Length: 371
Ligand SMILES: Cc1cc2nc3c(=O)[nH]c(=O)nc-3n(C[C@H](O)[C@H](O)[C@H](O)COP(=O)(O)O)c2cc1C
Image (cartoon, protein in one colour):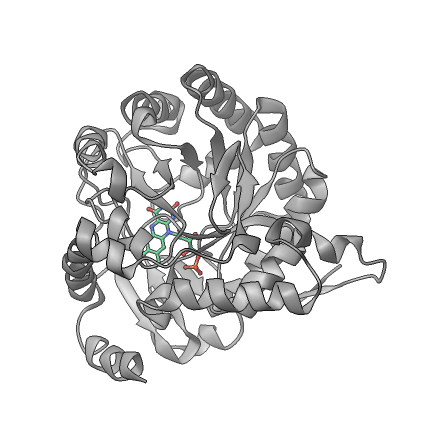
């Protein structure tokens, strides 16, 4: 109730200004004494072992919120049991001109064309190094990308430079090839460049003991997604993150006054596409690597559905913007209840449960049904 009122007020202001306010509040929330007071450990049934790491719950914050500005402790205190920082590029870059972030409240959605605004890998490494060990999230990922002016043929150099700079501060690394806001980036998801890039990145990250994940777009054709999963497995990637934002404007979103804004759509309207990609990636991976489910998770039922569809971990971004500071904790509490209701002893037991159900399933996606 209180949050609904506050949200009404906050939504009167420009989204990036509100983000700035949130960063200030999260710095405060991350101070050791405050963080200790805020932090509630999740139900033991939510503990997950994945990527060779122990996660307190499957719920984490997706990339893009914390660009490495020292707010991970505050986010952890709010109940995000892993925080993915980034996307970080080797050199600092300003991103696209403002306005570049838009709310579509009628659809519980956002459109963004931020364009990897970040302070660069050196500054991010310094900021992560300054986080006191006691306040650090149990699991902290770093998501890396290439600078806008680096041509695709030299993209690997950017990813490797980021890995070199940031691996020491990360529990896992994510190669982001799926932002729609860096021209040409998504072409790196095609078989040959993907293979070259992932092999090089895995080779660099492995001796450092860091699992390397790859984040994919929801707009890949089903066959291209299958191929990308196969390449990821063959290259030695530790997991696939499905998915980033979509360039589609599904269903009624197409009629929204903001629908014509360039950028990636996130939130509720992305859910069917992201769920489809997750389900397909899980089936294709067939247990060879885990899948991280992201995209349109707006409540605990959504998070539970992702786990049943094959997600070992579930990340959120837009749900947090609409759900407020209590969002992650609510997800955890209600998710534990849903698992118990259905007789699962742990979140891990429920991963992929839908695929073990013999009844055939079809996933409705805008523009048709994909079986
Ligand atoms: C404002 C904004 C900025 C984002 N920036 C990044 C980014 O830098 N790197 C990335 O991999 N994903 C980024 N994302 C995508 C999210 O991590 C996530 O994949 C996507 O929003 C779908 O999840 P959601 O529906 O829960 O928001 C961004 C999303 C938003 C809304």
